[in-house]
Length: 196
Image 1: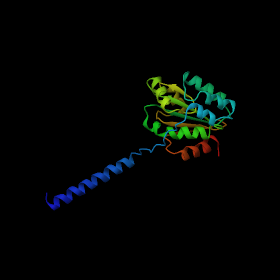
Image 2: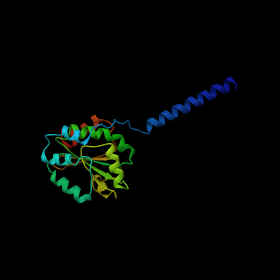
Image 3: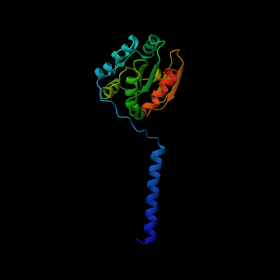
Image 4: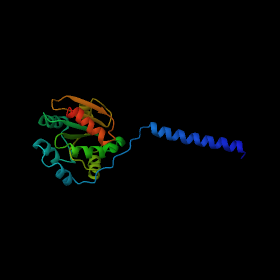
């Protein structure tokens, strides 16, 4: 190969590498916060001293609950006056998996004053969600929503993940997309659920 062709090939290779790196950065592929290695019992221990309404949620940690929108609505009615964070997720959703460590940490750090609830929206089989949570436990229950109708009713969105914040007065704020940092979720919990 001639020196001219060699430098053209090197320049082409360098350009291709830059293009690939740029596309990866533009894709917004979130860095993940590693999931906690805590058992349900360890999570409940960290949440001791919660109000009875929040303790009832913690007692159902990591469960996939049935009952659909009526059951979730009844739970929200029982939590009236308590700040609530609802995270719509699915076991197949890559951004949901990326934000799992964030929700684990914040639901423990804020779980004595804020109710956390999940909606497993769009998993074809309930067992997919159960298996996923067995490997990645959270300190709160999720409601099973195979049809995605509950998630749509609560979040006004067909996207996943979506997080819905309710303050003590029931005012609602919807955040589309994953939370990739503990600081960002804590900031939004304070701003939209705790009005701080």
